[in-house]
Image (spheres, rainbow, N blue to C red):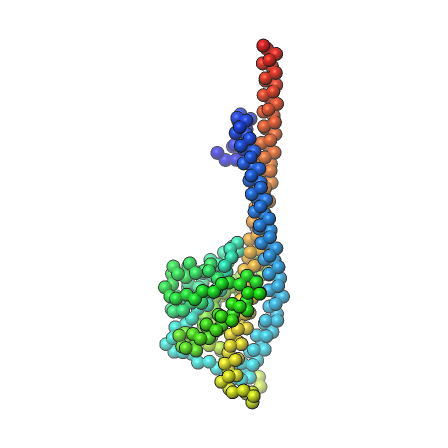
Length: 293
C-alpha cells in the first residue's frame, strides 16, 4: 500500500502498527538527512575543484600558445606511420553522480574506435571501460582519472610517456582523443580531436634552430612538451565539464531530498496527530464503558 493510503487508514490502525509507521517515518527522515549531508559535501567539493580548474585554464592555454610558436619556429614535422593503426585516448571519470557525462563519452569512444579501427586504447577513468570492453576487442591501457588538479601531473607523466613510446615504436600511427568540451555548468559536448602527429604550424618568422643543442634533441623535447601541455589542457577542460555536471546533478538531488524530507515530515506529523487522536478516543470510550457499568 502506498504511503498516502497508509496515512488515510491510520484512524483504524492498531496502536502497534501506528507506532511502527512512526518509527519508519523517523528512520526515513534520518536517512534523508544523512544523504543530504553527503550530497551537499560532494557539491561543495565539486564546486571547489571546478573553481580551481577554471582558474588554471587560462595559464595552460597561454603555455600551449607559446608551444605552438616554438613548434612553428623550429619547423617541426612528425611523420605519419603508414600501416600502423591509430591509437585512441578516452578521458572519462572514476566517480559517479555526474548525469550522463560518462555514457555520452562512452558512445563517442566506441564509435571512434570502430571508425578508426584502433588497436590500442588508453583509457583514463574506469566508467567508460565497460562499454569499450563490450563493443571493442582491443587491449586497453588503464589509468586512474584525476578528480583534481593535484592528480594531473602524476597521470600525465606516465600517460604521455606511454603514448610517445607507442608512437616512436610505430605501434600507433597517431593519437585520437575523445574527451568532454566544457560549455558551462551542467553543459558539455563529447568531442574527438587528433593530437598526434603534430600538425605543421606556419611560422611567422624564418625558421631557426638552437646553436646550443642538437636538432634531434630539440625536436624530441618539443614533441614531449607539446604533447604534455596539449593533454594537460584537454584534461583540465574535461575535469571542468565533469565537475560542472556533478554540480548540476547534486543540485537536482538536493531538491529531491528537500522535497522528500518535507513530505515525510508532514506524514510523520499526521501520523502522530492521528495516533494522539486515537489514544484520546480510546480513553473517552473506556471512560464511557466504566460509567455504564
